[in-house]
Length: 96
Image 1 (cartoon, rainbow, N blue to C red):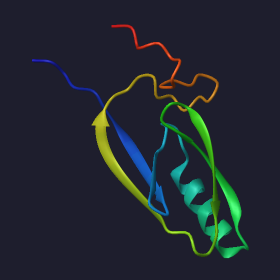
Image 2 (image 1 turned 135 degrees about the horizontal axis):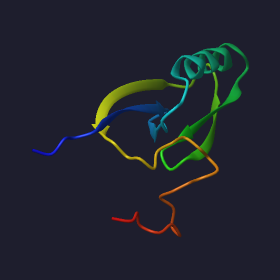
Image 3 (image 1 turned 90 degrees about the horizontal axis):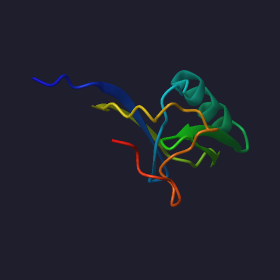
Image 4 (image 1 turned 30 degrees about the vertical axis):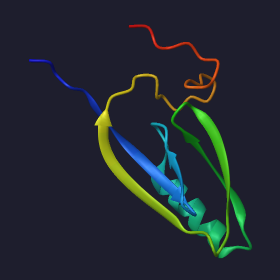
């Protein structure tokens, strides 16, 4: 029997646009940054998504933000290290 390795995947939806967060994101800090931006006149909130790419989203009092969590198969490339992105147009497929 093959052992299946899993990890927790957090999705953030901002005004209907979905972003899958990379591993290692501080979800509590991200939530606080979103709340702080929403309570101000608006601000950019930054996070790293799957593919180890940085995203900056402008959050205002009118933004709709939803976070969901799921258990998914392990992707060892998903480290949250933006110095090692993967999954782009010019990336090589993973070695098997």
